[in-house]
Each structure stands twice: as C-alpha cells, then as structure tokens.
Length: 109
Figure 1 (cartoon, rainbow, N blue to C red):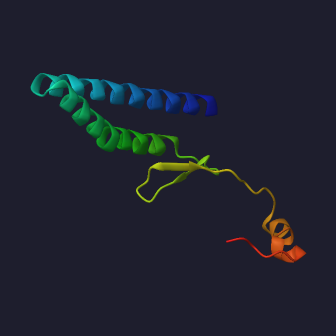
Figure 2: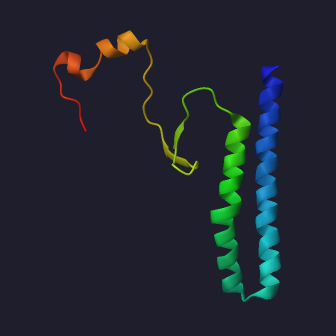
C-alpha cells in the first residue's frame, strides 16, 4: 500500500513538473508573438520565477505531506529555503543530558 501511495505521489509531482514546463513554454509562445524577443524572455522569466514555479512548489509540498524532519527549511512565504544540515537523534532526556551547558560550554549565538 505504501508503495502505491509513493508511486501516486511521484506521478503527481511529475505531472506538476510537466504542467509547469508546458505553461512556461505556452506563455513564451504567447508573448513572443506580441513583444520583441528580449522583452518576451523577460516577461516569461518573471512569470515563471514569481508566479508559475512558486505555485508549483507549493502544490508539490501539499502532495508530499512529509511526516518527518524535512531536508530543507521553509521560508516565511512557504517556499523551500536552505538545506537542513543537522538532525538530532535520541530521546529528549538523552539530548538534554548531552547539551553543551551540561559539560560547561556556553552555547553559541
């Protein structure tokens, strides 16, 4: 069952990618007939970078619904940010016991 769910999620993400690429190409075809090439590229880039792709990423995050520590942070507007470089594994008591303050070190800011 888990394999089926993961496969459907991956197909949905693939579909979102195909849809977003198709939409970007369609926008370029539309504006290329109306505007000079450099302006058409600029408009297409702006729409792709600030409208189409952010919505695609948000929809992809909703499809995946991770229930574990993510591999990247989420910015204030809901977009992927920096990778998470550290994960602490252990019980809360074990982590408290291993904290830097317990061994006499001051925490860094």
